Image: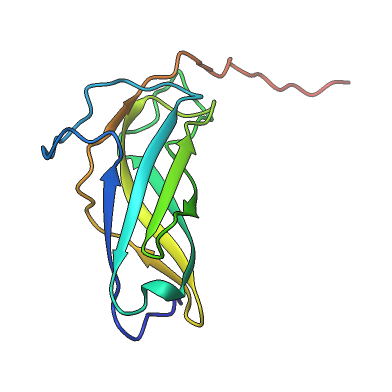
Length: 148
């Protein structure tokens, strides 16, 4: 079970390539494996200084296409603390085995002293990211027979 902070800490996520105050539902830029997504995490609250590290996770709710069998529909990465105690910068690389889909930030995780870990699972107000992967794999038909 994850420990809770004594005083709640609020988190805001800002897409660093924001659209000047608009809150779009979906980015108009299609991304691909190897592209890097940039996010900024800003924490507010009495225990901000106790946060030692942060990470971010994205996921697509769409089923994995049949021609991308074995691919994944979730990925994430770590964040680095910026010059201020309340802000972390995240640069997340889209992995080569990502399935096509529309990806959204689903979790921000932090490690803090002395609480341990804490996960923010909520609706974040950043646009979704459409990802297309030209890679495919359709499993060939397999037959297994006994050999004398």
